[in-house]
Length: 467
Image 1 (cartoon, rainbow, N blue to C red):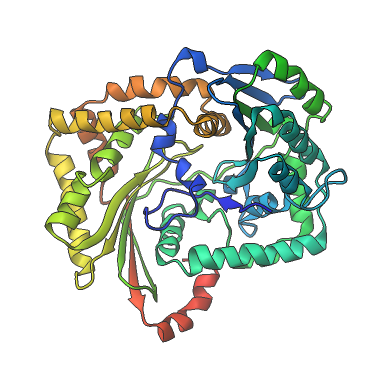
Image 2: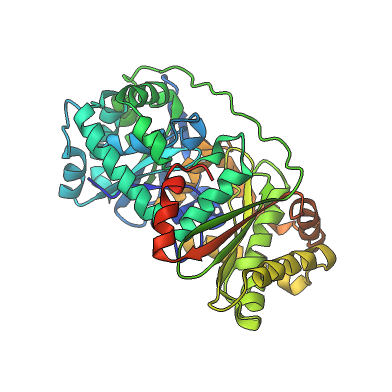
């Protein structure tokens, strides 16, 4: 079985889940089609599945990706982690291809396969030689309707997921603090819980829960198929129709998402657990791609956090030397409004209060001083350079298209990003900083290191996942 990753949000660079997880970032958004030559052929099958095919003949390889519009956002309290658990179970086999056969066949044909779950989507992919694309399509079509859910396999895999949670959250201080920050920021909206779920919810999960989730969300009309690489779209489309159109259209998933009420004052959380150094995180609720403010916020992230010349690094690491690492994180590619947050790993001997004050001062500068033309242009150049540098990746191009479709933005928005980003002014940056980076919209998370014996006493409450 491939290494299955789950994707929740951007996190400090020293503590990431996998290289796949890093794609839900602004840089992934900027990895757009560089010209109209890479515009996809779009087709909607009779059962409602959208197909996007992009011809890139420069090398005899391709990526096949199936994106389902379901993630932790589509779960309910008490069953957090259901989408990620089902992602694991999708590799347990069908009547035609039993357990282990899927990945074994892909590897035998020189390819790799994997999957990832996010707050808004679950995606599966195969990267392989272009002449083997039809094989990947057949395998994906088979498990879209023929998955066998076995209770023994579920019981075993649930323990695997619980161990994954221990490694990624329980034993990762920064991962635990990110979870706590989101749980404290989103009190009603399902962004409250982590993609991997809480221990109590994993224990309460049943095979019937998984079956209902699969039957509700794993249907062609809730999926997008993306193929990018050395293909002929007109030739491949009949094959796709042959494989996927016999799959019956499923129900149109409907879910009432609890609206997050306005935050009316600062919230704070202190997490005490075993760690080498303290950490500080500071989150602010902000809009997603649907707001024009998202483009200014994306550039602001670059200004604050992109490289050693960034404001936060120069101030807290280079000058004040109170942080080992520092940055700001924001992803505009989300279905609903999300979080813009700062993080710092506090230097040994430095005070948490001094780091928090330093972050406040950097925010105050944004409120009170306009960026210079040079600093703003440098940030725009960095974002555009990243797009140009990464535009040759079939995988990242497909990733962008699939994510845009899954969050409801539409793949056409990819070509709009740089144009809209170029219009952002220094006054726009100041305006969004004043509007969103405010005390009443702020949630602060502090990690206080404990010696091992105190951590052991604190662990049971953390495992319940209710910071």
